[in-house]
Amino acid sequence: MRWSFPVARISDIEVRIHLTFLLLPAFFGFQAWQTGGPAGALNAVVFVLLIFLCVLLHEFGHAYAALGYGIRTPDITLLPIGGLARLERMPEKPSQEFVIAIAGPLVNVAIAGALALAMGGLPAFRPDRIFLPDQHLLLQLFKVNVSLVLFNLIPAFPMDGGRILRSGLASFLHYGTATRIAATIGQYAAFVLGFLGAVKESPMLFLVAVFVYLAADQEANLATLKDFASSLRLQDSMLTEFRSLRVGATLGEAVDLAVRTSQNEFPVIESDGRVRGLLTRGRLLRAVKEAGPQAAVADHMHADIELVPYFAPFSVAFDRLQTSPCPAVAIVDRSERLVGLLTADSLEDLMTLREAAKPR
Image (tube, rainbow, N blue to C red; front, side, top):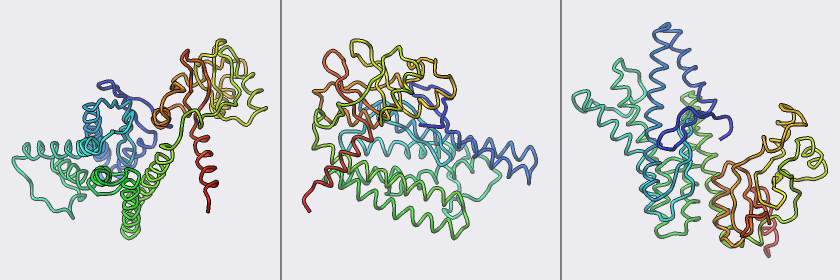
C-alpha cells in the first residue's frame, strides 16, 4: 500500500504502518496534553498504541486462519481506522471465508476474556458507555475489545460481518450476487454511520462512514469484474502490442520511449525476451527527478512482476493482478519470454468495450 512503511516482520508477515496512522497518537496526545500535561499525553499515546496492538492481533487472527487453508498473508497494514491483512488470494469455499472472517473477532473475544479474568471477573457493561473514559486501563481495553467485536460483526462490507454474511449467501447464491447484496448493505450502513457522525458532530465517525462506503463500493465492483473475468480467455484479453525496455537501458532512454507512446507500463526484458521487471510511467517521472536521466532503469523498476504462462486460466492472471503490488502481470511462454501484458487499465477498457457491444 502506498504511503506505508514496514516496522516489523512476524511469522513471515510484514507489518506496515500507513503514514496517516501517525496522526492518531499525535492527535490524542495533543488533546490529552491540554488537559493533563505531559503525563496525560503519554498515557493517551500509550493507550492508542495498545488499542492498535489489539487491532494487530485481530488481523493476525485472519492471517493464521487463512494460512490453515494454504493462503499466505504478505503484509498487514495499520491505518487510522483499523488494520488491513492482505491475503495473497481469496478463499475458494464459502466455509473457508467464514472461518477466516470470524477468526479476527474471536481474537478480540479472547483478549476481552483474558482482561476480565485479570480484573477478577466480568465487569458491569453497558453498550452506551463503551467509549466513555475510565481510570482503569484494563477496563478501558476490555471495552475497546468488546466494541471491536460488535463493530466488526455488523453484517456489511468491509467489516468481518459482511464477509460472514457473504459466505452464508454464497452457499446458495452466485458469489457475485452474494457480494453485491453484502456490499449494498455496507453502503446503507455507511449512510447510517455518516448520519450519526453528523448528529454527534464526530469527525472520526464520519471518516469511518466514508471508508465503509468506498470499501463496499470497491468490493461490489470487484465482484462484477470477477463475474466478467470468468468468461474470458487469457490469450484474448492480454495486450500484445506494446514497447519494451532492455534491462540495461537508462531512465533517459525510457523517457524518450514514453514520449513516443501512450503506454503507462513498460516491461523490462533481457536480450532473449525474458522478463526482468516493469517500469511504470509514474515511477519513471519520480525516478528521473530524483536520480537523473543517466540512472539505470533496473534500479527503479518493479522487480516483483508476476509471471503467468499464456496457457493458464484467465482467473490465475486475474488473481495475481489483484494481489500483486505491481500494476501488471507478464504473460510468458514456456521459456518465460514475454508474449503479453495484463494490466488493470487494459482489463477495465476491455470490460467497457464488451459492455458497450452488448445488444440493447
